[in-house]
Image 1: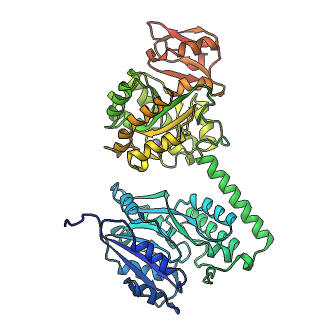
Image 2: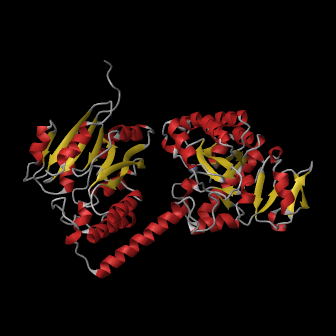
Image 3: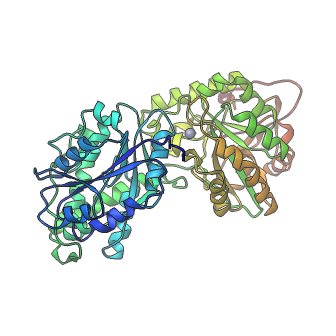
Length: 539
Ligand SMILES: [Zn+2]
């Protein structure tokens, strides 16, 4: 037998009169496939039912916390935890069998990750409420007590849960943990929980959760400190719903506006904040491979594979990484791939920054790209694909096409390479834009091995299905986006009708890069030995 080197994990379950649901919760926790050691701690928060006995009967350690309240229970459980990692769930929640493995994998994947959280699906309540709950939960951007884990050192370093905060204790802790490092929100890590809180008091609960998130984000403290009292038997129906009509309308409106905003900012195909290219309507089986966050130490391998299959792709590079690996940026262009701007430093909240800040990021990256390759980039992909109306307006005013994607295997979460292959093949359509990563932000030695390993199979399978790989500029003429085309580098200017340009582009592999600007349609540059530098302002 070999000793596992996996971290020891403590799982905390705060419990107040949960005899209906606790046994199922504990069974799911005891059947984890995690191959390290773990302990389960039930916190008996002044229960008056059989909950503690149920826990003891299945051999689970019980810690008593006589002071009532969610945060007291959490604090007692976390204080009793012996693990290097502390995970936490709720008595009415069922976690998947690989829950602990995935939490630990997420926490240990990068040294800067201090905590990780998943999202929720709901196993009871009416269908519309389950769907609404799933949607709201998917938008989760903070720690969720029913599905989270963190390093114990980090928990201790921020002095743990604030004893005065009950509702939002998890979010508030998360905000302080963020000062120590990254919090990963894994939207594929889904725990199944009960909607009883919302079934008993839907609008008051939703209102409190939303207001708390808003207050925490804006003022770094919760709006409400306590839960609405929801400790009723789980099978109660919506009949007990109490709310004023005005309150209901207001909350519904708030949810709708928030949902629309997040969709517009995050949905790769949403055009509400301004035009973006996420895919094109293609009558031929063309498809575009794009790589974000390079160049990195893996880019050479990616280029080798693309060369082996004679496939051209588009690289959205980070300015700082180009300064690090100028030779790789040059090689991207020399081998006939298109290159685009992915900002200078990949700021997390670039979309929320001021236009001036975004402009600096774009310009610094463009300068780095031009210095390394001679190419002025005209494609822009926002970090994480997140955007705002002012960001799109600014990028377009500077001559960029904003490019997102329609196929994403979420390879940055480093699923196994077979999973990356499956996800790409499942979503592939003619005219699609596939998002992959040859780097991860500005990290040295980014964890993209699985993407590199998946790439040959992706190419072979798609080619077997008859797909032809094109760069984003080659895809553009079919997009219907009113763009004018002109070849940027090493060419002379002459008038040419659009059709001739399309014919020319079929032979574009010889051309270092094809770039797109909003120019008068009749202008384009044709092959010539000399390099012309004509400023866009003159045209
Ligand atoms: Zn990126």
